[in-house]
Length: 348
Image (cartoon, rainbow, N blue to C red; front, side, top):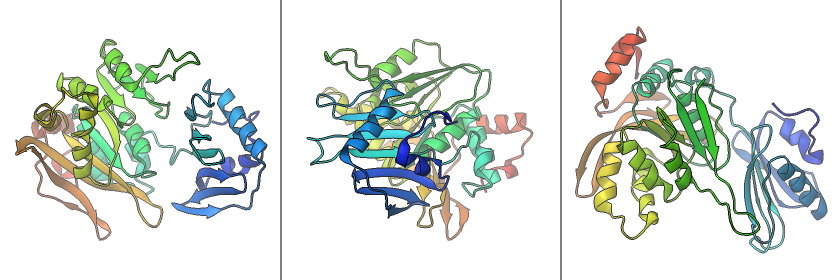
């Protein structure tokens, strides 16, 4: 909840508007907002010094900084919105500012059903998959609702388990009794003190986790995540991709950034054996966010190609069942029984 004593001047009206999803500043006289997935140029015009003052006021609440030695910054505002800033000479002339508000204040899968994000049966399946300890990758394009959906999946983790979350900037809001939330740290002015996602994943494994969740996998930390999942610790993560297949393809490539000694021969079977489900989210042309596809990995690899098949997909206004087998079905059946659900109560 936003602190009533915090006010960001001329931008506050956009931050307070529940229909606005994102605000961005390309130049002091070019300020845009997004509503229902559509961008629009506002009539607001600022001075360059006002933009800088607003950014500095926001960053003062986060403990992060932006300057010539550190021209990019990511930070989380008290409202939960994510702030990203880039300054010259990385940008051509003006400070570039993005403020991405929380898409949907949801903490459980059931919160997504009334807004059409998924059906009750699919929610039952996803809940059973989480409770069964399946490793889940949430994919989607920008603003597709990946973080919101990942947060809802976290809400299905049994309360007796210990969760470690790992993020570049705090965005997840797990409501579990035993949680440690970790975020990266930037270098100091002296160039010291940086803490990366790779370091956080390694440290998390020393903290007796029952589960680990990585907010978003972008680079070489994919290798550390896969090693953690392959060691038997259940986990989840999100990744930027245009489909479930592309998500697996990307997850199979990112670990190669960790060094020349990492090869496809190691990464491909590790991905195949570590990920059980890919849940792909979309933002459609009408601005509606939903689960677009759920895909299943069998663990089989042929010629450096990981077998991935469609389990559920959204086509022509309805969900249809694909040909994929349900991973770890016996484990899920046992979970369903403990939830007093029958097999007809999940999927579609």
